[in-house]
Image 1: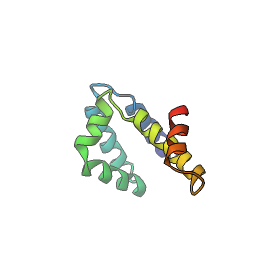
Image 2 (image 1 turned 60 degrees about the horizontal axis):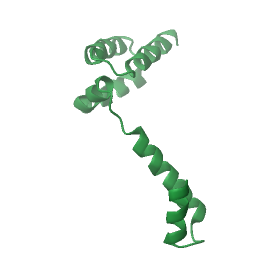
Image 3 (image 1 turned 135 degrees about the horizontal axis):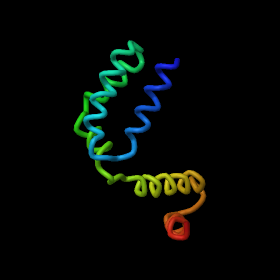
Length: 97
C-alpha cells in the first residue's frame, strides 16, 4: 500500500503541465512496472497505447476543460427539462445560465 500511495502521488505530480514531464513519465512507468502491482501494469499499458496524447496532456498548457464544463451544464439543463418545453425555452435557459 505504501508503494501504491507513493506511485499515485508521483503520477499526480505529473499532472501539472511542464516541459520535462515526458521524461519523468518514462521514469514513473519504469518504477510502476518494477513495483509489480497488477492494476498499475494495466494502467501503464493503457498509457503506452496512446503515448503521444499522454505526452501532450502532461507537457502542454492547453486543455478543453471550459468546453467540457459548458457541455455538462447544457446536458444537465436538457435532462431537467426533458419533455416539458420546446427548444425556445431550452435556448433561453442555456443563454441565461
